[in-house]
Length: 229
Image (cartoon, rainbow, N blue to C red; front, side):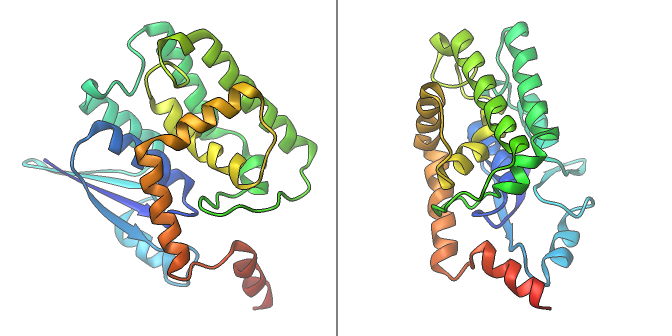
């Protein structure tokens, strides 16, 4: 069996980070293909790899053929199923149900937050004026973190004790809060520090920093160029 994970530009691709963290948590070897985002050729390059024309994509090559998984949460679920030893979902049924709920809420929600505070992993930026909807979503996220940590924090340092898919789903939000200097509760600050200290997050940061060193533009410059066309 061989895994190939197709991801987008590290500094920007929050959904890629989610799947990549789950992949790293399995400790299984995998090949990585990075597709540069926000370029004229990006759509065509992604279409070559993904039937949904989005990243991330996980390709699983086995004797019987190749399976293509083309959604971040589906990738996480697939890896949890294939690598039960990684404990990507809590073993307790009640904790697992809540962890799945938290992961799904992130997967399908918080649209205002995503639009107002796009991931810019390796930079520190000034937050724009935040609409009330964004503030409500920030509060909801931190409330969910606090509830999980209060209930399961004695079992380990992450939302449900051991690192899980729920943490994969919220890791890009942690990075957003730090990038834009978002105020956090004491519990959220401690949790954010734990997430950022993960070896996988440090590896992702190094890759994002290298992208910037290689000339990755700021998002404001991309927007300005797009508007000038």
